[in-house]
Image (tube, rainbow, N blue to C red; front, side, top):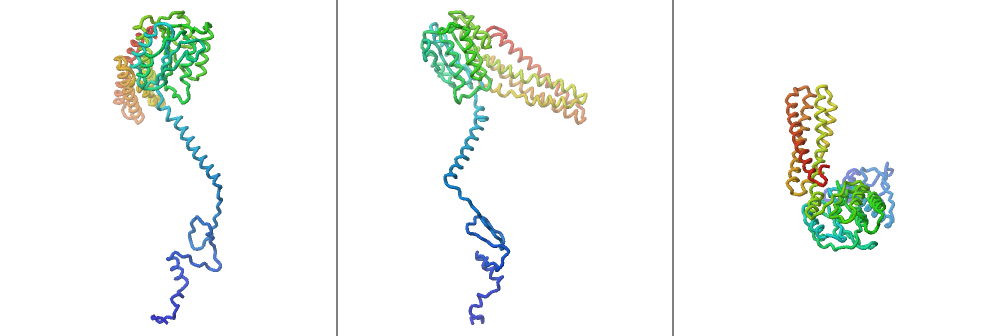
Length: 416
């Protein structure tokens, strides 16, 4: 008997339910009934069992280490490949230049100093976001050194191009064909970013034909085929400077390539003016003209659609609005932002920005007019707002068209 009057050992003979509760409270597993509904086998258990009566079997297949490593390598490879695809497909093109330009200069016998002097002067005013390179041609027929890339493609390399131009050495023969062919190949080097708008080669030459191959037609076909094989749209601008042989051959080459006629110059001053035109002014004209080309049709379509609202043709207005909203000229204006500081270029850039703003006001006015007409409200107020916005846009578009026409007339060959 203990001091409480109980037999010794009686404290260990509590009711079964009470013992189970105490055992669970101490983290122990109660002994199951003799004939349980479920049994538990926890030999290599890695799962969780809920409830007192349960049966759990866990079956595991252990892969060999070499297989596990191979799977990990494959998964990592897939992740890397996926990331690379996304980068190449969407991210990298965001950093592509709007323009890629190669300056290809004739280093064969003649007035090389005037050519390099003109290039040195004008390259500093070229687009700061342009990717540019410099190549020269002139040397012995069949020699690997009869054309050389002096500066590879890159942005912000205008000073490097100017310095390289001053160091060009005089060559012997005008290896025009190989110079052009290799210049085309420069655009297709591995990992080379394609231009978002224009790939071009500006050729300054004192020779209209290749000195190493007298068959002009063969030379022209060779160049044309190489350009086609590059898989790129490449524009050529040919500038003939004091051409010493048949300039017609240069014109034939331009025609065979589907390019505009060469600009022939006879003085260093004229050469510099034409080179500056192609390098700095022509891109300004192109981007400014693109703004007009993209925005004008949307406003014309909106004008036609709003007249149909009186007949309840909301579908026409909705379609025109969708096209107007999709008309984006941000890339063109971004290009103009990085162009030359010449007064005419600054003016066209400001007019382009103004035109984009006015087009936005026209779209907003058309949306308000459509909403008022569809809901049955009086459309007089919204119609007045829309009409004034459209008139302001049309007036600015007319001014810009006149400015473009005037500036284009100052280029080589006059109005084009």
